Image (cartoon, rainbow, N blue to C red; front, side):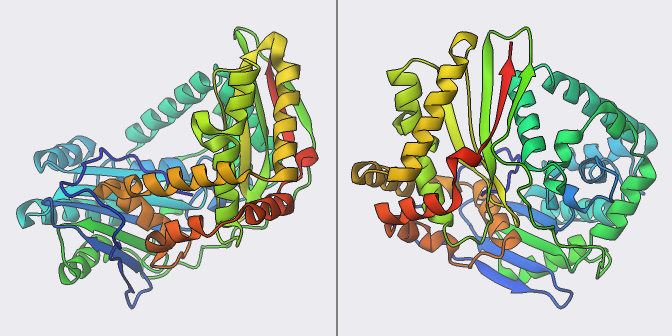
Length: 434
């Protein structure tokens, strides 16, 4: 699983190849974890701080839609600068700031030129935003209105409805399913005090993970960390572990009427994978063969090429601290919905029972390992990988050993892992259409 970031990417002059990625990793006395990769090819620095345990799963019981707007509000002004002044100063420096949140974290970061007259003013603005955010009522209302408009737009797409209903089946009483319960009412129920309280209690130095990629050495990186997060509380005791996922609903089928679309959207899935599962690589490589490998995948060859049911079908795994979803999704003509669903279920059952062929496995290995350097061929992409390593406490040599772990897999490894984790008859199914 890769932590999702939204960076304008700058490709490095020297493209990364299969050589080792030199990750420097240490902790501050306050407990902040730091991961640094020096890249001096470009005079740029990508910087991010992620607060573990500060995502939607940390929202108070009975409330939702707090973590995301709290994170977004942070980069909309400081106690010293209103939104327009803050944004103007960042742009004048030629820098870029961002904030976002996920299920189990909130993230803040910036990109800046590495020259001190650009980097340090950017870092100072960033530090002010984190330690003394403005939380202006007018900005809050605007962002809240935008969230409602975005939700209403999403609800006009059957693929969104299918995804939302799938989450309700998979996580009916678990914090991972909170986003599926979003309505205009839940969004409006949040007030500015909720956001302030969340930020004050969840953003601290002891649950911070800082990642830095670019034109900077360790000594300067240590000073940069002090400058950017030194004004935050040293400790928070508000962080609580994510509860285990209990599969209370399995093998369910939910049919949702939806007019105005020429196709039926189908989603099949169930919570399966934790980030530290020993079968992580066997499941991911198997998924590439089943439905993650584009036109090379079994699902595409059968549902698209052989039967003509769909233009595209995709399967995927996510990985969180607790069980994250495995999913298959596609759209098909209404008249083919039942046959396409049955064909998909059969492909999945056959794959679990028989595993991949040796030819399929070798092709998957070649594609995965061959394209692997493209996952970190820019500062932004590499930063995202470092965040993943830090957030899920992966080994420091995770990137260096990734291809070796893929190449070590056998057909039997994948077959065993899929039979252990995937029971086709237990998959929850959502059908959205006429």
